[in-house]
Amino acid sequence: MMDAKKMLNKFNRKANEWLVDLRMMDEEIIQIKPTEKSWSISEVYDHVMRVARSYQIPNLKESITESAKRKKSKNKYGIAIFNLGYRKNVHIKMEEFPKPLVEAFTPSKRVKNDLINDFLSFIKEVNELQDILEKSGKEHKQYHYMFGDINTREWFSLIELHIWLHDKQKAKIKRYIETNELCVEC
Image (cartoon, rainbow, N blue to C red; front, side, top):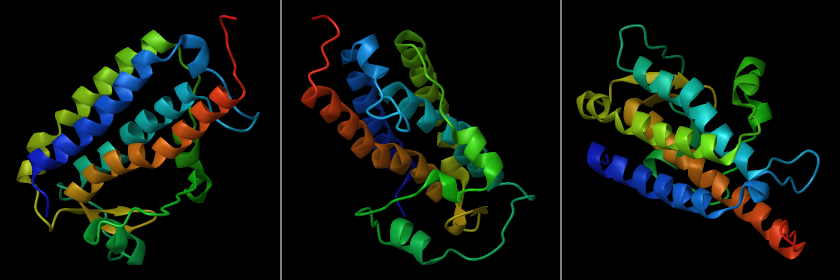
């Protein structure tokens, strides 16, 4: 099992990559939606933070308590991702989660400065979980709707994995903007 510092470093590398990327984009660019039903880049950032704050972080914190919910052991998807490090072709559809979670996960359009400040706060919040990670053991588990019972460190690794999963979506939106030569200053 990866130690807490390595896990935090992995998260921080990915989060800082996203932060630099966000700072380099224009306000208008982060609001463009390739299609009516797709998200803008600002919505992708908002979604990643919403899922972490409303689901991943609370469950991570719950996993170390006496009231942690254990329903069924980790399933084949959880084993592939957490035990074997499998990431290729991982697709998780938000609609597959229970309705209240989908509502909590649905993003809002955000202005760039607010988004940057919130993303900086988010990075700080995630780093403040280090103590919990260091104190947790394999026996500290909490039920995940898609993976079964996963431990505290696996809950933490989901935060970085979720950002990583949205890399493709972010790149796709950027390609759309570039190929359609959407120049807002022309």
